Image 1 (cartoon, rainbow over the protein chains, first blue to last red):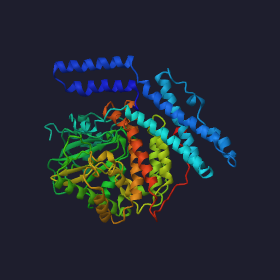
Image 2: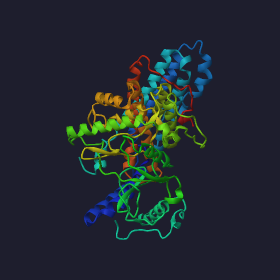
Image 3: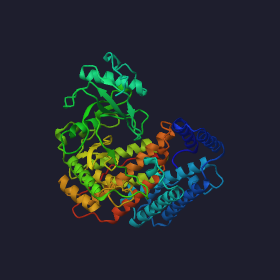
Image 4: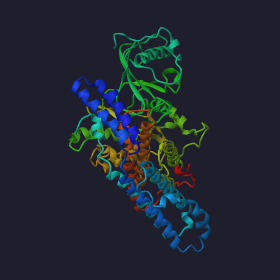
Length: 176
Length: 399
């Protein structure tokens, strides 16, 4: 999800109150809606996003960042030391993003680690794009391939943990 | 018509409101009566306004009026107008009514079926938001999203709609816009309001990508390296447009009305701009609008769509450019979903469809990457012109 857990709960409760309860005359049905609001408010104080898929995403990102560093170290840099030197260091991912010390962290810390790793990947790709013409072709291709795989993995993990969208039902207001 | 119509005793009510929020329906009816009276010079009765539940962006109202003679042969009897308001809290706020107003006026009398635009302004002192009054077109929208169990459209009905859908797009892209009011958009403005680079065949793609890059920088609530990678690819591979045309910007099933198999109006011109006509082809052919079929916008077989469209528009469609604009369209759709997620997160709306839209960012970016991969796998056709940008911009994640 791209919205915060708390805001989703607040939005659901507000929608049930203003858009559903106001159109519902049946006393039992109104009681059920208020019961759902009560449970949602309980979720708000006791629940949060699952850490499981965030950890998988961070693992995929950090693996790509570590592999990119290793690839750079293995490459014969003769002739391009000046390029890899200052510019390369400037875009290397922050240590926290590759430390792997994320298990047991809070959800907020995991979200921050995922975003940090994404910033690092974006910075690598921006550098790669700017310097592509001066880099060995195979190195540029391999680095880009690593990061594209990591970005695909992040999205695939997110989609694997998302329900089937109900756009047809939402636009018609009817169950399929 | 309401039994208690709102009439303005004077035109003093126009401009009397401070800028800001939009009034309740009863007050809005009085403001409308005052505004219309100020435009036509005599009192106008306005009945109970009715807001349409559709849409996430502009607010759309049906406005029953009496006593308004617009010189179109209908006289001063009862009629309905459409009022669109672009609220400050809307999905893509801040809004301007100007592009849509200019587009509708530019298309009057053309082969593109559009409602007639009457008045519009960005002056928030009138209704608390930019506004546009236009004719109410008759008909129903065909929705692009259908469940797997829903039967397809009847074949002859589908084919009739498809022909009109294609022909209207071809007609739109043939409009000699340089002689029409919309020519004013040819010289855009930058964020500071200063005159920007005038649009041409060579820079149309780049200007468009830069526009949406800026929108993503405004709306994204976290870094999306795949979006940034896509933006760089799009900048590196800008095609030269076959011409600069009026681009609808959201041309698809769901944004036209039909009645008895006849398209009565193409609607939702809020994203209209000048650009490469291939852009509308890329958008209309998105997988999200196929309704579970292989048909473009649930209507047309792809090969036939591009052939008939090319004949109607009068230029040779480049499939390289179509693929480019499909990738661009997926980035743009991801951006609109980012806007929805932000709009909801900031509490501007409690509409639960917005976070549902926000959850589709990943789907759009995945499709974009796949589309770019497919475009890379296809060697550019011999003679395809590229106007690649050499502009290097700082990625959004580093801002």
